[in-house]
Image 1 (tube, rainbow, N blue to C red):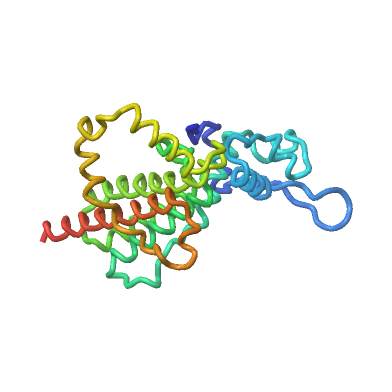
Image 2 (image 1 turned 120 degrees about the vertical axis):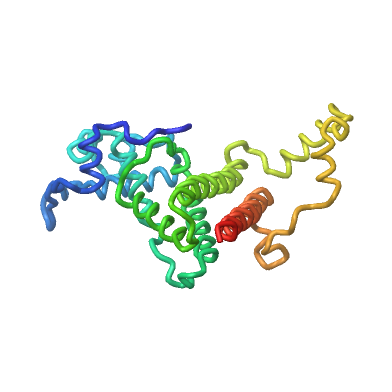
Amino acid sequence: MVVFAGQGDPRRSLSLLWRADAPPPTRGGPGPKPRLSVDAIVAAAVALADEEGMGALSMRAVGDRLGRTAMALYTYVPGKSELLDLMYDAVHAELPTAYPESDPADWRAALTAWAGEVLEFHVRHPWVLQVSQARPVLGPHEYAGLDTLVTLLRATGLEAGVLRRLVGTLFPFVRGSAQAVADARLAAAATGSSDEEWWAARSAALLELVPDFAERFPAVSGLEAEGPAEPYPDEGTEGAEAVPYPEREARETFRAGLGVLLDGIEAARVGRT
């Protein structure tokens, strides 16, 4: 399911995202229940999406979590479209905006750290992957994440036109890798069969039904025959076996692919000198 952001009223959505209008007052102490707040509603919605997925998200379900009716929420958030924008931007506040542990001149180490943080962020909040990048939310935390990446890329010394394309390359690459990890985690629970059961059943059927597979797909078969992929970095260490094989493969593919992308950036830097 793909969800497009920015479907609510533009001014109201942006006002909420940037907190441009003063929020309704809250009440403390004994007496009636404290009034709701935008932040409380967004936090409850994020928790719901993290636990049950985007499909469970509704104003009524969020209201239930807060012990309120859906109608009570509309005073603070006009509807589900605006709520989704707020949720998306709010969770992006988790991402670091600086990498002081890295040498400022070591752009490769900084970008590697950035990519790892963004990958794990999406794995923690897999519902974020369902929000299309075709239309940005235009919130402060989303912009902070973009500003961070541009700052790290500036250290490469490449011109602005190239940096814009690198931003458009790195974000989709990391999101795609995170999607592979998230899907690997969800597959067994969603289908009711383990990865081992799924592959065993289909591999046997494929060999039986397509006996000339190697002849029909020589490049794929040849690659398999030449040997396995490079081992996962943690393979053989304590606890590594607890990570399911599809997730380990997705993470290793991410690591290897990121290395190739960074090699390409280095080659571009060398080519301009």
